[in-house]
Structure formats: structure tokens, C-alpha cells
Image (cartoon, rainbow, N blue to C red; front, side, top):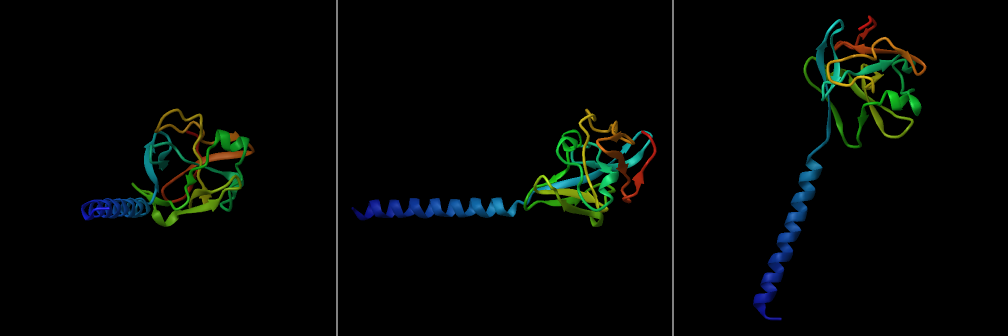
Length: 156
């Protein structure tokens, strides 16, 4: 093979290798973040919400210990999943020190706030509503949380 073809082949190989290394470093440097924030909701005040402004709920039977809403319950009250390698981050008046996660019996991890696993509600059709507030459904009561971690028990 002529030297010119070898130089071109070596250049292409090195360039492709550098591009692959750069892409891998870039993707590993990007850590997924699950943002927990706050929003003011009529009759409830400032509450914890997800990155899309959807209301987040706690489930009394979880007892600030572990995820108990699974299977058909989780179909109505989807847990806030924490993808592998992801981190939960606080925004607005949410407190980063109250964020954590718990093992989900269905697999993976669920974001917690002041030890309460967090869930959305399929009945909340848009951000800023809390139609699941104070519902006794799927085996227990559901409430929103204040940024302090306090359970807000009043009806919405």
C-alpha cells in the first residue's frame, strides 16, 4: 500500500477514535437530573411540584419509610422515578436537603421529599391543579407537601 494511503487511513482511524472518545466523555458527563420545584396552588398555598409544574403527592400508608403504592395503585398514582445515575435537584423554594430516594418494589428508585416517596396523579390534567388532594383512594389518603416537608391536609 502506498504511504499516502496509509497516512490517510491512519488519520481517519485516529479521528474516528477521538470522536468516539469525545462522545462517550460527553454523554457520561451529562447526568440526568430530576428537578423538584414549587408552585403556588389556589387554596393550598406553595406546594412541591415536578419540573413540568405538576402537583406531587405523598401517600399516608408509605409512613415516610418506603414505597407502598405499586401495581394498579401506581397506574393511578405514578411514582416520580429516579433513573439510574440520575440525581434529584431542588428548585424554587424546594429544599435540596429534603430530597432523597427509596427503592421501588417495581424496580428502580423513587424520588422522596422529607422521606415521603413522591407521586403524580393521573386525574391532574394540567400543571397547577391538585385534584388528588385529600383523596382516600387506592388504600389510603393522598396529600400535597409544603416546601418545609409538612403534609398539607386541608382540602383543595
